[in-house]
Amino acid sequence: LHSRARTRQHPPHRVSAMASESKSNGAPAKRARTEGASTLDALKEHTIIVADTGDFSSMEAYKPQDATTNPSLINKAARMPEYKALVDEAITWGKANAGGGDPMPHILDKLAVNFGLEILKRVPGYVSTEVDARLSFDTKANIERARRIIGLYEDAGVSRDRILIKLATTWEGCQAARVLQKEGINCNMTLLFSFAQAVAAADAGATLISPFVGRILDWFKKDTGRSEFPGAEDPGVESVTSIYNYYKKHGIETIVMGASFRNTGEILELAGCDRLTVAPALLKELASSTAPVERKLSPDTAAARYEGGRVTLDEAAFRWEMNENAMATEKLAEGIRNFAADLVKLEEFIRTLL
View 1 (cartoon, rainbow, N blue to C red):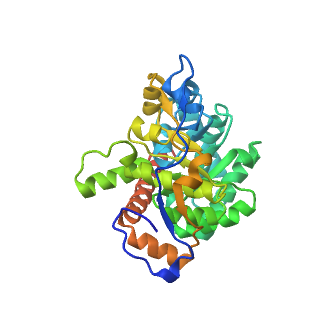
View 2 (cartoon, rainbow, N blue to C red; view 1 turned 90 degrees about the horizontal axis):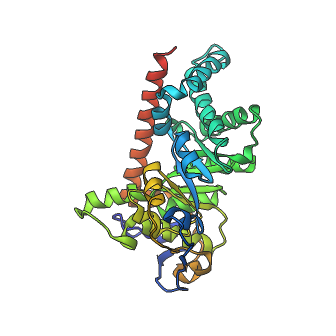
View 3 (cartoon, rainbow, N blue to C red; view 1 turned 180 degrees about the vertical axis):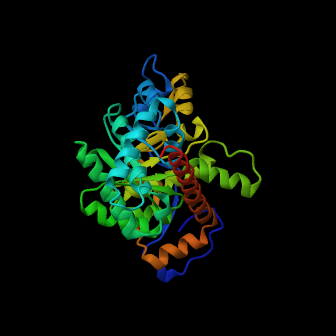
């Protein structure tokens, strides 16, 4: 599978069809020219914008369609005085429903749902709620926690079609998604850094993937010593562009939502992507600009810009491709570790309140 991250030749028997890089030909891109519109407004003409935050005021300010959270964001938001009631209620519920066991897993799930319920009052679309990152290599535990989270939302009167369950894009996470999707539980495959992960997520029938743009860029800056990768040369942008074109060419319905941006240039290079989840600081920058937006990605041009057949990966092939992709392997492991560390910090904070 194509990758710039120290990828060597793979065994030919592992992959049923090979992917190839996007071509630059295709129909001319279009510009959004809404008179007097901000860059953010113009971008919204081509792409659904999602708020990557747990801060309710940011959602109200920028009016995104959806919102995503993760353990790092929840850990930060839970310490804010204005959200104390959400924390206190989660603690009370967790203690009452632990069945004599450790209440902490129940508290964490209820706290994530409490934030999600508040977010749903402020966005008309999906909210993404993440399963404990420490379960990233346990298919059964991922399934059980996802079901509990969905149950908490449904107990609060929220239909499961408003919720995306975030799972790390490990092999085990993808197999959990395969089961959950069949139960009508929609999944958002996160910490996605490679084409192989995108293939596995699509084969599992995941509703949405979150390929991380900025973290890919971080790795390549460190690995190459380059201080910048301009425009379409950004390796994170290249990765998402290739995945998007592959999905659209082959009629894969999984939504592509670019994530983890380092600058507005990366965001604008992906104008036209199904969804982009953007942090408040970058939403503010886009809202303050009036620069025109040129559509870069489109289903109409995907087939022309992507050559190659549909790819199939079994477990052995998936693990081989990840082994051969140093960037994806390192960033996936780092992402899981960091989310796990933030969960530990959140647990330590909660324990001071018990």
